[in-house]
Length: 184
Image 1 (cartoon, one colour):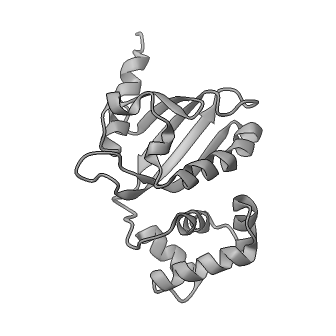
Image 2: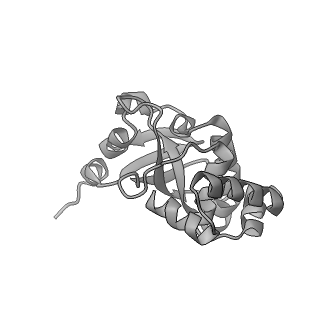
């Protein structure tokens, strides 16, 4: 029996995108639905349109390059932005997994998978771009020093953002904050 790979791509239960130099070259319908857009609107666009801010797009590109160089793959939970439709500009948690086709030039071409986590992890507080990044790393179990190294900021700066997150989520401990972030 022959497998129709195009049909598998198009009907996958997760959002899929093929990239070249951080531009969407192709995507499936699930990705379009997730971001409230159309295939025509997304193909040929920079992935930047899916991020809450240009800064977050730029920092993500810098952050994942050495990991893609080393491993060929990358995965994290991050906040993304719906592009069009009735939920335009809504920010939501998304699990993103990617594979570079060339480790030596990781942005040259890749395969990306997007899973919408909003049903299990709604965004309840207004967060700044940096707070979103720190929150995503806290949920991965990283320490302030590890987050600081990853984001290329001091661990004391991370602690300031963590304290802000704790105030916004009315948490008394980091464990409580992570629990509330995970629960939404």
